Image 1: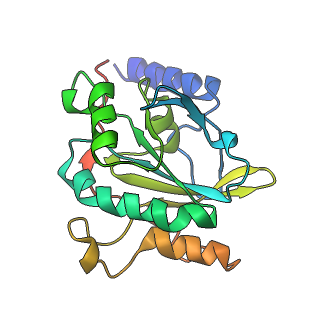
Image 2: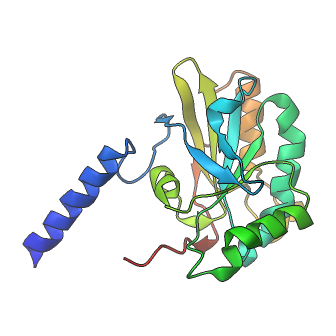
Length: 204
């Protein structure tokens, strides 16, 4: 039994490496491999498409999780506040649509239209990208900074320290990190545990 489990672990690691993604997800300081996913408008989106950006706020979210819903307006506000400063939002929905029908592609399109998203809302149908980032919750947010070598991961975790009420948040991790980057400072808090619903993984 132990040998079988060990063999499976090796197989998973080899499959991950073959995709060019790190086992266990990116770590702070890693350069993030570009991806191409379908947006709710049917078009493919990648980080490299926008040559003017200084980085991205990449958030794994969904339609159905109560915590994701509580953060939805804050994600919209982050995009409005920081897109002009070079840090737009890319939202990615990675839940399995069969396990969570409310997170289907059609439901994503409806949600994006109803809330008038100003940013891409991408579907990670294969779940390769969510695994590459090591995201475990919705929402789970990553901040990448554009450098000469590519997009460097500088923050991973929660958006702020209040999962229900943004107005009551006393620490705004994403906002602070971007402001520090703009001021040419190191990100003082590079990682905070993400709070939310677990990713709905595909059945094996």
